[in-house]
Image (cartoon, rainbow, N blue to C red; front, side, top):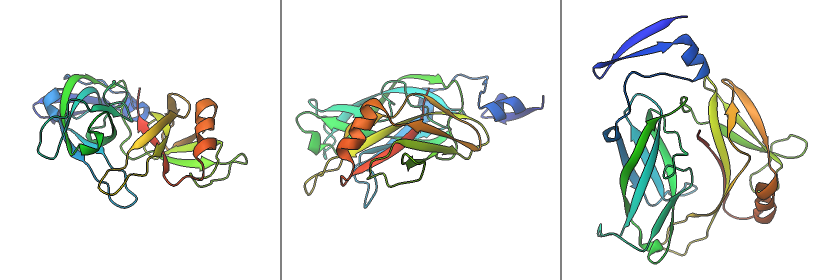
Length: 236
C-alpha cells in the first residue's frame, strides 16, 4: 500500500492508494461548520436553473450537512410564512458536498413564496461523508427501450450515469419538473421524483438505472412539456 502525507491547515492527512481507488477516506480531523459558506442565486439566466444555493466547503473532505433556511425579501427581512425545501437534500442529510464547491436547488412554498430574494442559512449538523463526492459532474443520459440516447423531453425508460473520476461515487438521480412563472417571478421545481435509489457508479464507468414506478408515471405525464430535467447528485 502506498501512503502519502500532506500538511493541510496545520493537520496531517494520510491518504492511501486504496482510498483514492475506492473513494473511501479516513481523515484525522472532524469537519467544522465554519468551513462552509453559501451564496444564493435567485435568477439562473437563459436555460439555467434558478433558486440555486452555492455551497463552498473548505474542509478538505466531502461532508454531509443538515441546513436550515430562512427566506428573506428584497430588503433582507424574514418571510416567516415561506417554507424552504431543497431538491438534493442539504436540509435532511442526503446531499454529500464535495471539497471545494457544490450546490443545491431550493423550493419555496407558502404566503410570500414569490417575494424571496435571498436566504439565511444555518448549519445545524455537519459530519464527514462515508465516501468522497464526485470531483467532476456525473453526467446523465436518457435512454429509450432500445438503449439509445433520447431527449429528456420525450418518454424514456432508463438513464445512464457516467463517472469520469477514477474512484466510484454514490449517487441519486431525480426527474424535475419546473413551473412556468409570470414575469418577475423565478422558476422553480414543482415536482421532484427520484429515479431508483442509491446508486454506485464505478470509477471511469457507467451505471444504467431503470425508470419505474412513480418516476415512470412522472415521465409519462410530463414528457413533451416545456421545462423538465434529470439531475444526479452525490449522496449516501
